[in-house]
Image 1 (cartoon, rainbow, N blue to C red):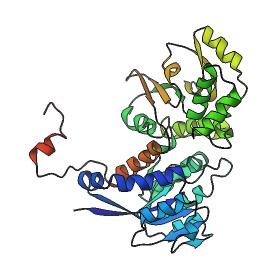
Image 2 (cartoon, rainbow, N blue to C red; image 1 turned 120 degrees about the horizontal axis):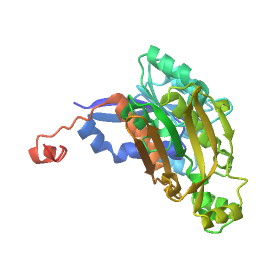
Image 3 (cartoon, rainbow, N blue to C red; image 1 turned 30 degrees about the vertical axis):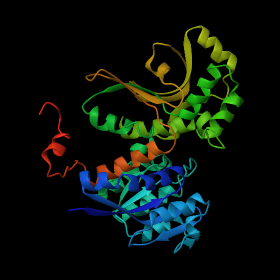
Length: 363
């Protein structure tokens, strides 16, 4: 039996479009391994919304967006429909929230999530804003509604930071977390280490599609601080907001001379997020650090992101990912959808050889 899961998607930027592409690309895997058919029944972007309980034609919608046209002008679309109104009307099982991050208010994503949870819909977030502004409220609302809430894509994309911290380090006391969470800043610092100026490195990052036209959230440290707040709330069980991260210092004040001098000393400059356990809980900070070459984070290069967990009973755990473009983050969204709907893989096969390939070699 294949279960049809109806999705509402808010935000049709790079991640949203990549997610819809993955639904088509992974159709056979979703059906065969998990017994799922994912159907888009509602979608909204800044131009408006579209509702179709029978399912929206994904190739046609993606072609429409590729031609730089909004959802509001798509066949059957409603120009100007606010995203929370779409969430209130959508005939859907899950809401995917992938609208742009709003650090000031978390809107409109925050209201979209509130509406969905009030209706008992599960929610998957790629947007950090709602969690940073209202983590406790949203997790309580999800519990009250017995609705799923997943957000692994909000921290380091495909790198399963949240999953590792919440599930795989269960029972641990985490003494310290250190991480490089922003690939834009990391790639700029790497270019400066090769002798380029900050301006040249930023411009190249924008041409390569790493940096936004307005890169301030990345280079001033706020994107990293957002992710640290989510880790504090979800993994470290410490209520935190952006104001609790101090200092938040980016890379805009770092010169090529400083980077090259550090290189001569055998050091690497990185923008590091830290949560360190003390007598009064975790102290949160984001700032540039001069790391020795043998530090794990010193080897997190270019586009890469990484994290280090220092624990009491599971030792030192270190992870990094090299991901480029929006597809890995979209894949993390898909991971969360699968986890909420079908927590355990179901392998359907009548062929022994095919099925046995999926089993551990020791069996």
